Length: 89
Image 1 (tube, rainbow, N blue to C red):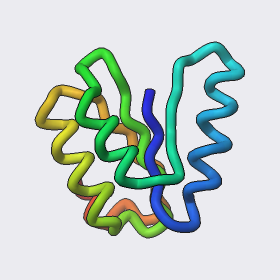
Image 2: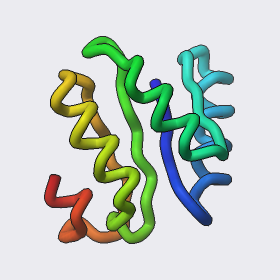
Image 3: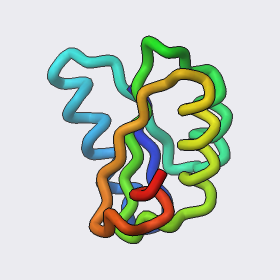
């Protein structure tokens, strides 16, 4: 599993990755969004991409979500606005 977030939700993603790893699930994240984007390109259909976005309007997360869906990766979104760009995707 890869967890991605931008801006003020990065600490939430880092905490989630730590907790998933403590539960025995392989999980990765980074506070560097370029690193997350590069790693996301290596995901396979057996992987999961978890996106965390308060607004649901991050261009970077939206681009990564679309790319990963096209690659057959399951994308899970946690946002406050289901009508946002990411929510609609």
